[in-house]
Amino acid sequence: MLWGADQGGLELRAARDGSRHLSGRFPYNSRAVLSDGGKSGRPKKEAFAPRAFAFRVDDPKADIHLLLGHSYDKPLASRSAGTMTLRDTDAALTFEAVITPEIQRASHVQDFLAMFAAGLVGGLSPGFRIPPPATVPDAESVVEEDPSEGRALIRTIFAALLYELSLVTVPAYKETNVEARNWQLTAGGAILPDGLHRTLNRWRN
Image (cartoon, rainbow, N blue to C red):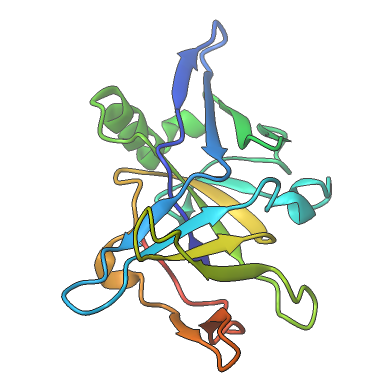
């Protein structure tokens, strides 16, 4: 599973029935800096193209979970439970979730509510996999940044299989974990990710 990250624009509201309504958004075409390149390497940036998650988002039978910290042991809502809805546009993937009074009794949900109130949880991170090249040959690409802007390699994800959205404390990749894939120049000059098939590598927040 791969993890992305963004601040997410999270909003939490209380309802009269005791439930909490949580909403957030993951913007497309927003570049994340995965690595500054260190002393000798090149910076790496990443962005999701509009509707990159469409394959599973558009499938009403595909369950997608809302989790705390990418842990399936800490669920908050899900589509199959009828407590989360998703809306996909060219601008962003947005969600609306109902945190029911029943799930609020769980200790991890109480922890989340306390951390959110304290301003310690403010990020949204998708858990996804890149489809194999044999299925989707152009699921992702890597190009060189415009020299007028910098010298980074820019990775764009055009198609990803979304399995969960997670609420995280730090909505950014840690540099020590962004080397799950090596990006290399091919002989023809195109830049491609090495090991495209290794979709189970994790990029942690």
